[in-house]
Image 1 (cartoon, rainbow, N blue to C red):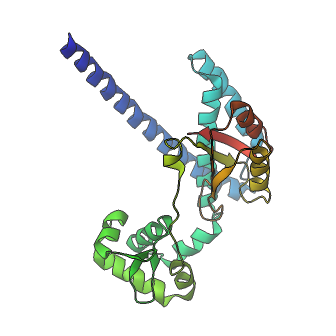
Image 2: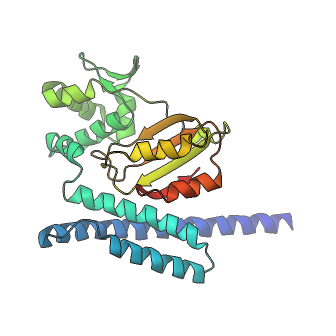
Image 3: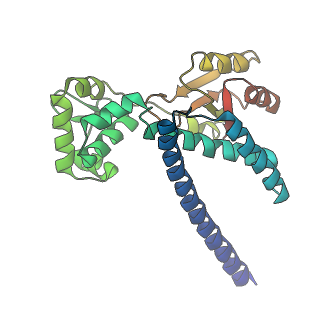
Length: 265
């Protein structure tokens, strides 16, 4: 019977992989439709965000999820992430992500170079004045960067040349630094890890509200990493605490006016 059990496990996992693929295809279609919706809203002079529509989507999702035997709270959290991602795509499509739009304009017509620039930025890799790629003080080879960006060394060289030849690009890409991001190791170290999607990441005071809610309970924050709302289409705030955050405090955070969704690692 052990052989049969192994075969069953393989079959189930294979079906799970198939379902994951189907989910991703549907998600890609939803994101595409969100982008089309953004262009239409702009043409019609409508606000990008429709909170009444979002509330209705979440209400329907909770009901349908419950009917299918799913936890309505889990369904709502999942749908909030999906909606937030769609909103980010809408913002990107109409040029709302201002900073990165400028970067894209500088590399217009050169998608390979843009991919290299994006890789540099995401990993905090800088270009020094001699055209070398650095992670802090460590040198990164052009071949390694090319592989990470899905390009070749010639494209990396062209990207570096463009960066050093453009004052704005040079100011950005010669001053990047890597960050020791603790999200994926926090749980293993016994820390608390929260990833928060704000309703409006560009509104002042979001971090202050969250820090206040946590620190008032005597919980120390080891790290807080906020995505730049003008660079990232779906900005998040990741908070690492010196111990797991109690469920009661998490529920209070969910109710904060600035918070759209909370994910717990």
